[in-house]
Amino acid sequence: MILSFLMKWWWGGDPDILDPKSGLSRRDIYAIQRSWYPIYKDAGNNGVSLFIRLFRKNAETKTFFKTIKDLDEQGIMTSVQFNAHAINLMSAFNSAVVNLDKPDVVVALMNKLGASHRVRRIHKEHFEDFYGVLVHFLREEIHLGEDVLKAWDKYLEFTKKHIFEKLNLN
Image (spheres, rainbow, N blue to C red):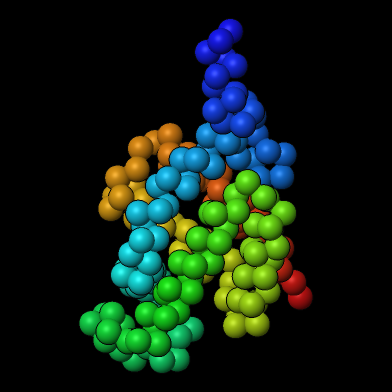
């Protein structure tokens, strides 16, 4: 009984109750945030690395970026303008990760992201490709365990849902 009380006190409530909006528990949020911080610490390099992986998976995605569409991977890695875009991507992820305990804020952030990419003619499959690259990166490069990857899967499904709400408007 004391252990149960201490555990709830430590977590600020039952760590395994799912938030109805995000589908994430306090334990999930902790796992996502803890695994994200080392990645975000090197946001520029990790962001560019994720984009290069995306371009290898789906070459069409590179054509969305006028400043790099004719560059090789080395040129992309040294492009200041593209590095700035990669940092913007990582900052958007960071804003969502930091605010996971406020699902309505994350919904607003993801809706805004979906709307801004809709005008650029980015489609659902491009986001799906990027999320696949991210999961592979988390598994193979960051070596996250299965429990943490399950939390990330829930987080990515939550964010995709709200990106797609605004991305797919006609």
